[in-house]
Structure formats: C-alpha cells, structure tokens
Length: 362
Ligand SMILES: Nc1nc2c(c(=O)[nH]1)N[C@H]1C(S)=C(S)[C@@H](COP(=O)(O)O)O[C@H]1N2
Ligand SMILES: [Mo]
Image (cartoon, rainbow, N blue to C red; front, side, top):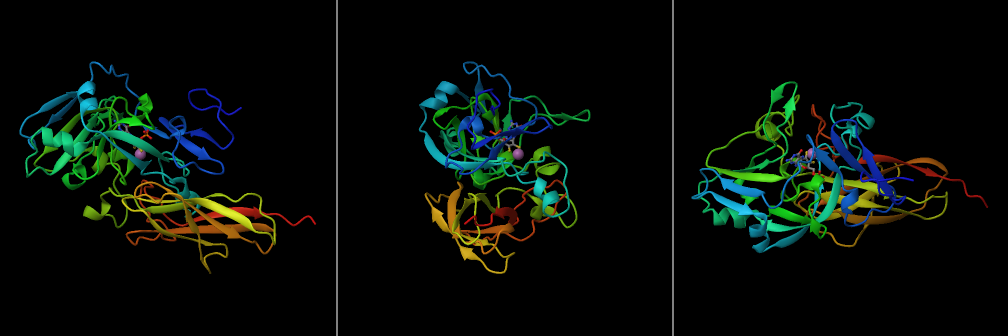
C-alpha cells in the first residue's frame, strides 16, 4: 500500500516521491492528472522545516522606507479584508532538473526533481497591493521583500538569514496574493501556515511561506535567494539575463494507455506557462519530423495547466519516442534543448518520452 507523507493510503494514480536532500517531496503522477492538485499530494520544498506558528500570536509587519507608516496585521485582521481566489500553479525553479542529465547529458547538482515539483491549487487571500496601500505606499518604492519565519538558513557554517527574496514593484502590485487558504482550507504547515505569498507565473521561490514581514524599499536590496541561488550561473550568463522571475512554457505526456500497433491510442497530458495561457500543443511521434496539433481540453487559464489530447495510431510495435511541444499565448515555444546553467534551473526543453507499443494479438 502506498502512503503519503502523513501516512494516509493513496490511490494508485499517483504518490509522493521524497528526495534525500532536506524536506523535499515531489508528486509522482501516474496517469490522468486532476485539474487541482489535492493538498496532501502537493509537492513540498522547504529549505529547513515548517516552523510551528501560534496563529493567535502571529503578526505580519509591513515595513521599510517605501511606505509612509509601518503596519501590523493579525490573522483576524487579514481575514476581515476583501479576499480573492485564484487558481494558479506553483512550480519549483528546479522542476525537471534530472532531465539535464537524463536528456541532455549534463547532470546538474541539487534536488533531483523529475517533473513533479509543480501543482495547481486554488489560493484564497488578500491582494498584496491592498496591504501596501494601507501602509501608504510611496511612489518611488521599487521592491517588496517578503521574509519567512522559518529558521535562518545556514550552509557550511555561513548564516544566510531568513528565507527572503526581493520582488520588483511592478509584479508586487499586479497579481500577487497574501494567501491564507489553499484548496478551501487554511494553509497546511508545510505550505506556509498561516500566510504565504503566491506570485502567479513566477519561480516557486518568489512565493515565500510563513510570512513574517514585507519590507518595502526605495532602493534595490539583494538577498542570497536572487544572487547566490535562483539565478542563472555558468557560461554566458550575466546581468539581467541571469535574473529569474517569470516561468517558461512546458508540457508533458501523462497518459497513453496500452497502445497496440495499427489501433488508435489516446495520448494525453498537460501544458502550462508562466504569465500566459496555452496557444497550442503539438505532438511528434517520428522524432520531430512531423507535428500534429493536439486538442486542448477544459479550462485554459493563465498560470494554471491545460490538458491536451491526441489520437495516435502507431504503425508498428516496439518502443516509440513521443515529443510534445507547447506554445503559449505570448508566442513562446518550447526549445529542443533547455538553456544550460550551473544549478539546473528551468528545464523547459521538449521532452522525449518513451512509449511501448504492443503487437496486435489477433
Ligand atoms: N519561507 C520559505 N518560503 C519558501 C521556501 C522556504 O524554504 N522557506 N521554499 C520556496 C521554494 S524553493 C518553493 S519551490 C516553494 C514551494 O512551495 P510548497 O512547499 O508549498 O510547494 O516555496 C518557496 N517558499
Ligand atoms: Mo523551489
């Protein structure tokens, strides 16, 4: 019997796969993937571990020279404010890192995520812009740095302080949420209880959990989470090109049943993109020679995944390679090869997935 990380039995359609490094757990999909990822199956990425927070004593501070007055919010205060609900994916910057080795022959160090460091949830909370307005946002503010309440992050004896990452002002006042709920329930401890940021379409590290402070500044302030890590390093990466914010467009084949030569089989999967919806998904079963347009199924929302389907009649038995390529509504198409970088971030190449086709038995 497969069990999830809380010890509950899980169905055979997917389970969680934990990694040796730290408290990282990814979702292992097996077959059809639901539109919304159930919370108990949602991947977890913790630099240390989830802090135990007393909801009654918890406060969120809005501080810094970018606001006219510092403000303090309790959970009850936040719950009284106007809330919004958004359906959005949360994806780790390193999702698919293993593919740098498996598909491109250049293994990269770090948590060896397959493709399960992403989930889509319904997040409910208060727009960050509302909290900034309450504090009297100054017109020349340039950044908001959310700070987590988890333990200070210490690596090899170096104390990097609390997990935090500057967010440019334009994104901060656009569609960012201070989320209090995930899938209709208060946030679970691993997902940031009592409040986390949700930065739709951006690298997962932007969505700081266990929020304690929002620092609004009139000058740019860096943190190790946008300089040492969660930044492209290595040959050819420099300056603004190496900054990480918006996520690329990606797609995956989830399902193919048990195909038989000469009979139609259904290929199905998902496609998603940061700050865009999906324009089209194409599939090649001949090594990229010809491409066939898949049907998009269900909702196609900006920042959440879209399901796709395509009927395929394999001409012969044996192993086939299926390639899926998505294009988003802002015109970005998946490349054949992901841009190499020292830490294995943003693996967005067209996947090459093996599908076994059986001989017909009659
Ligand atoms: N305070 C804090 N926020 C954090 C992290 C963390 O370790 N501490 N991990 C980040 C990373 S790298 C990712 S991918 C997401 C993961 O969110 P989840 O665990 O809810 O899936 O949270 C981000 N926010
Ligand atoms: Mo991440």
